[in-house]
Length: 289
Image 1 (cartoon, one colour):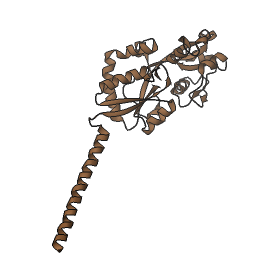
Image 2: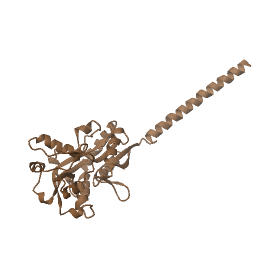
Image 3: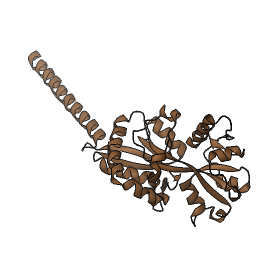
Image 4: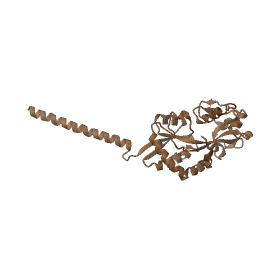
């Protein structure tokens, strides 16, 4: 009786061990499948700013579009083991989301700043170029540079302190302490530069040429009716970058390898002409930042 009972207990114990081992194996298999998707494909979330046309925006069909998007799609094609998912959002959510790991990378026509290097990985290869300029009343067409603007002691539209355009003007002021530009930090990204200049609330404002063209130059722009009132005067062409989460160094390295090939292909020049109406890479040799 005792021997039969002992054997039964032993059989139950052995069965339990086998069952637990099987469950453990299944659990491990499920975790591997979830992380690799069964085919070693690495899925990454690419955040883009919805209101950044022509750099980043959503087209009439609800798809991600713009210069940065087209370049990232080329990167995705080169990286066969990656699968990109594009997620449109606000500028603030993009910055916070990439920093916290909600998104692996974000594109928003971002300039380089030392402050951002503490929060994000900047890759070795920049993604594109952006024409930065001053929006002015047409009567001030003699203003050709930041120095001209500063010498006139003109007022500048407020720029959010966390906007890289603020850093551009702040850097200029540090290099020209004898005649700085009056720089005021705004609370948000949303200062309506064109309207402020047209109304005379300020003498000028910093803007990206692509955005000015979409708002003023193009026939369907919201401020096209002001095309004879305001002008855009370029003062610099600046490199733009994707921002990677701090834990995505391998992804950033893989991006760099893909971009090295893309730079040599001539595709970036075509994409620049498509979205900006000009090949900004033609002036790359004089780009300083």
